[in-house]
Length: 397
Image 1 (cartoon, one colour):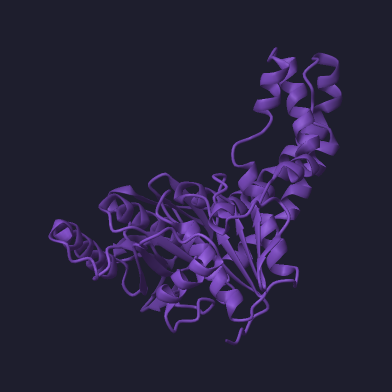
Image 2: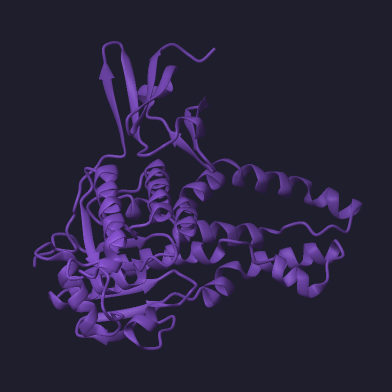
């Protein structure tokens, strides 16, 4: 098996309980079995990756097979290193407001910090030169979407708000010191925030690089699971991430012929057909329900063999373009892939060189190229799986 790039990154996500940890671990075992230096790591706080290999994992990679290492990310140490100065200021601020010290300690750890540090760890491992493949067992879908959107959200804040906020604080700090005892953030706090941002530089570039990174959705043949996977595909496309395959896991095998399972098998067949039709042109890989839990390296390799067959698991299984600009007569049309998007949940706006797109609870600000910045939006429509926004000559009124 050849490997054309320095390191491939494969991310597996899905609704909790669909078996994504097993699929990720089996994929890693398959890669290592092909002679590739492989690391499989987990960002899921459920810590089930070690259970699949039947070993105890911690924050440092541990060898679990020939050419195969596994790691359970733990952000505690990184939290102290990067967040310590900011956390100290927040504790001081909450204490000034009368919050109990223990409560202030808890409040100073913001939701999503673990995911933030996990992102930089993924990039560090992918760029460190030690691995040919990094396989990521992601948290369940809602957390994954939040995790993958963090670099862009933080970049927006650092580019627009952070410099202004820092200048304002520097200007008013001497005055406020005479008027109030309210703690004012010092330069060391802003420097800590800057270090946090710099640690994430390049993460989005890596994770949206079609050559290096692919995301694979794991689903079960259940209506609710499929519906959530469709929403996930929409939100990932919104942020420019490429899904190259869908894995239908835990299908009843053909060998099961007992009449008691007839209705169940028919339902699975219907759901599998819906998955293939709904996610086309993405390839759908099928994995049968195993007669025993695929725990341990040998069983994981057997599971991966049945799942991938002759396919190279590190290959790009589907090439798609989530964003493109094309000319149509006098108009330039920005096309954004939004598979399964609901027209009623879609909002589009234009502001200061940005296209603002909201799908359900998720919002993205897309920086427009110069060719579109000087134009105004004529109309926007949802055409199949694509949001099409037409730009014409002239400024916005």
